[in-house]
Length: 229
Image (cartoon, rainbow, N blue to C red; front, side, top):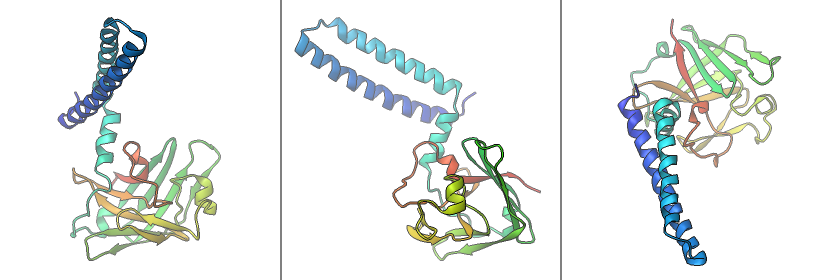
């Protein structure tokens, strides 16, 4: 059964779609009646079409809540600073990010080492794995927290960016949380964030400052903790 929050966002999206549909239908029918002298039944037909569309969208939302859940999560971006009590031990385990069919997996150990395993879902012969490299936390006075992964690669935008830095200038990325540039030459730096439910997230830097926060599909920008020791 859909959750209350899912139903809430489903209703919001449905109302927006319905309003836009009504507005467009009104404008289209009004123009048609003025120019062509169409009869008023065209208005009723237009309204029935909008109602049918709304019903289909509502059914899709209620039966498949994942897209709306994604929208709800994306609205929270860039999320909040993590608690100041966060320790290295809270990161131990496996984290995953998904870029379509590709999986980017990070495994952290308590001894301060990690391993990255990237499995490309579009090129079955491409798999990249690092040795056990060092990872460390960087804390800021304003409560922000970053995690630095030495020797990791940025695969969120594909293999060519990860291997060659295609489209990047000197491997400089943009931090959407602090609004500053970040050098990620031979490493990956992630923002440590927390969502409304209290879940820890490792959020990617952007390759460009004009990338903008996604309304949908923001999940590919983050790693989630999927396995603990």
